[in-house]
Length: 289
Image (cartoon, rainbow, N blue to C red; front, side):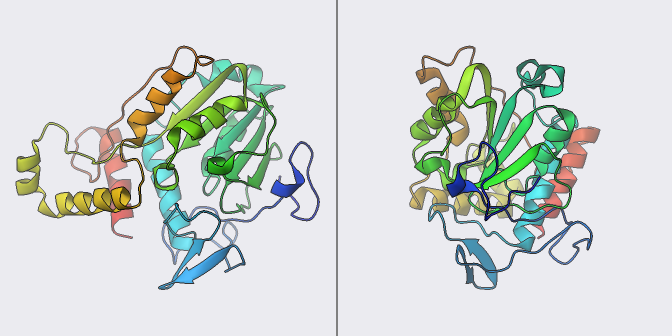
């Protein structure tokens, strides 16, 4: 279900009633006509060196164009592969029993909307809301999904205890104050609900290899990693986002049974293990974009 930008939808603040976006493509020039709509420049975006960027939040520095939407969807498939072709490793089914009947769920930083679209199909009786700085537009939106524009770093326009399941993923490049973000996510969570957050911690080491050895066997990768880490630090962002999230969860007394699961994601198809190899192939393809 798309949200009419000129008419507020049920239970969504009028200030947030807006929708646009893009579906999956294997590359910027491989967009399926029946699945994808390209982002045009708008008053809320700007063009820089041939790429389109959102203008709603200065902290988030990645593009918001066709190529980036394709990268995000490929990233989704890589993570899903690592997780055994599942969209989560937390007890989501317990938070959304009976296919989510009577429950509400929100995806913060929904990106292209691919994760929430698949989740809405898995839990078709729940109401799903996807939130992002950039409006989302897909051709395959289930009837139980709405997309709205909002920015969690400035506070979400939803009442306290609005959702049974709150999900966020990969916001390292858009968040400075993680304590506020986790408190805000907790504020809109109903008692007994589930908060699931997935994020990364920089730098990304080569597992089981020392820093000196990594420099010897993968000099290009380590150089890239150093540049990314320095870039995020220079912008005042938190490189240890994955670790900080669980720390802030533990600081909130209303949250119970906090658990952390660490997943190593391959950056190239080196593994003989099928799932790791497939995920590495996806990651390597993303690196070539």
